[in-house]
Amino acid sequence: MYKLSIIIPTLNEAATIEKLLNHLIENSSEEHIKDIIVVDGGSVDGTQHMVLDTLSQSKNTRTDIRLIESKKGRAKQMNQGAEAAKGEILYFLHADSFPPKNFDQYIISEIEKGNNAGCFKMRFDSNHWWLKLAGWLTALPLKASRGGDQSQFITRQLFKKIGGYDESFTIYEDNDLIKKLYALNDFVVIQKWLTTSARCYKKHGVWKTQFHFWRIHLKSKLGASPSELKSYYFQHLTKT
Image 1: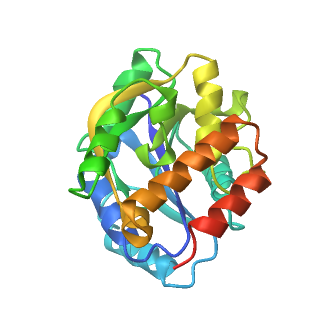
Image 2 (image 1 turned 180 degrees about the horizontal axis):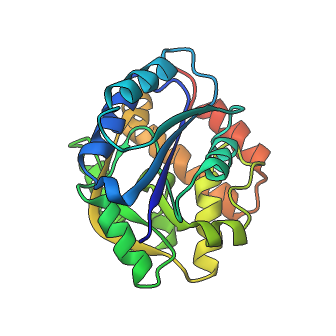
Image 3 (image 1 turned 60 degrees about the vertical axis):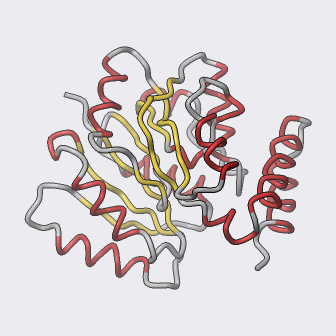
């Protein structure tokens, strides 16, 4: 039987990580989950303590929750989590994205069909009309509609074949991986809703945020380097 290793990169995610870990335990079958690995990149807000508290509270389950430390950088963190993982299927999940009930069964079902990688369709926790539309578009099998917030499952074998996440990317590492998978024609979108936070849109404004995300996509398509994408992102989407 296939088993999942859930890998969650964190950096100052105390507000959501406990809720997410409990959500994963409550909405999956223990027989399908090999381990849940939180890879922390140096949080200073108590994220690590929240993970350890959840770990101690879940001792009555068979779920193996582990906390490991890593250098900051989501690509680095996810690669390190993949190295530590014990399952045949790697499931990369952002700390503010909540997969649907029985997500583990849906993923395993796709693997058994021969689909070695994919994601869920996604909706934001927002009633803004544009974000609702953007969420609806993620149901389509278009590469342009993909992103890391939708989560990413992939067999360990395929992950190794494509070289994992490119650690030269500080941002956009998910899209780079997805681009490789689309080139192999090995990607499926599970038609079940994952819910993710619209916190970036709430912080900077929907239209400003969307405009800069579009610019980042365009820059990447036109050949911008990982360092150029990082510079643009930090200039426009990290200021308060």
